[in-house]
Length: 130
Image (tube, rainbow, N blue to C red; front, side, top):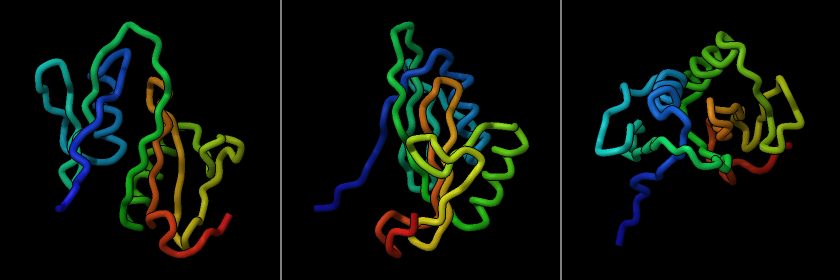
């Protein structure tokens, strides 16, 4: 039996703003409306469904596996927008990237404080390299 991740729902103050931010940073197709959601679809068909809320938002973590050239492009957009970024999920190593598993990784926040991560190697694929 195959199991594939299909979608998750992300709470946002302004789903249009948050969905557009993610799509633009990751260079994904423009978000599409489906019911109360604005969906951003990754290249492997998983959807990140943004939904407006007036309730308190608990920041979540979302990680995206990209190619080396994709990382360069995304990291360039992060720097062009002057976004704060970190090498670690604890956000203690500002303005650094990590090189875990022989790849590169970086963390940054979306407009609602969700912690986004871009990595070039899956965790555990090449050994830990803090």
